[in-house]
Image (cartoon, rainbow, N blue to C red; front, side, top):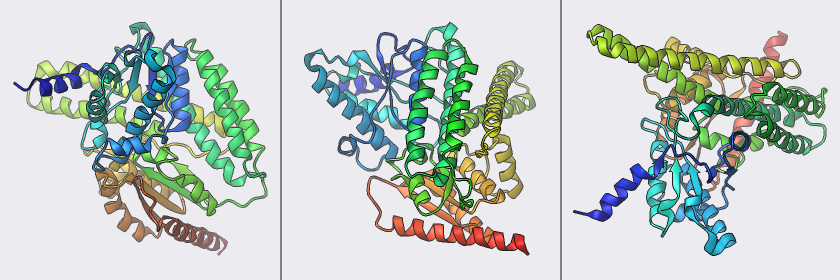
Length: 452
């Protein structure tokens, strides 16, 4: 018997899961800057010590301990955790104890390689002496990213709600920045305002999330919006609007996508990127949809014993989705009272969009149906261009590209594929300039048609 191999497989079971991080430090990788910080603040409010890992400083380590065949975000997050460990060892010396940390790395089902990140990273960590004692805390899209086991049962419901609210607030802060920065009177003022705003909002979550004082956090949001809109020059003409879709990590992580949104803005764009909440809502929607399908099949085949579980799963996921979309809608309405930021897509509407055109299906529950439907919605809503961001060799990203590119060519809406890895592609800047020239021409043509 190969006991070494057996021990390795056992580690994948024993050292990855939903661990209670009490008396430990929960390490949260940065995907979206605002989202990670608000999530950490929410955890701290509930008594969980949480810290956001520095990101992209350990890329040399990430590349050293990957082969290049892994998904690009796996390299980034691998580097982030190894860099943290390296820095922590240097700081603490002999006092460094891997058992004092839980590394948070969720997962998903399906063909996306994200489902294997924590397994691969577990294998890498286990090759270092002592690091097998550093647990990887994971929640999965099965069960809608349930937090059961991570915190006391009586706190789970509120923590889950406040985590979702933190993601919504992060989406709002991002969309405020993207709406305001292209029209700022003084260059750099929007970035400075957002840095202060993020600190204020994180402080509000840390103080108020556990006490469910949502109104106090909304008051902070109102003040942020009020200050932000005063930075805008009302005399500036509206710029071409660009919609960004794609793989959730890469489209959100500014270093990994080489600051794509700021680069588009540099060439005259106003950008809206698909949100964090969109994926979370999609998970609940797919869970409800899958339960409904099982319910129909079991009913047809007379499997009466399974019907109750299917019905419960469908109702639980459906109610969760109703709550989330209701909270989301009310938050966007509150911001709209002061500034017209872009609202988010409703998942059922995105599925209807795909079904109407019969170009793809939610039966394939990767990011591809979200991205393809999102591209179609941006085009229908009058956006002047769409960008599809994905890791190099990403299957859902390439599937989206194969369908979206000819479809956008028929509509006349400029379209850009933006695959990324750790290298800097020499033609990227020229591609963005060309794409933005096309978007500006489209905006002008729409204006000319309106005047006729």
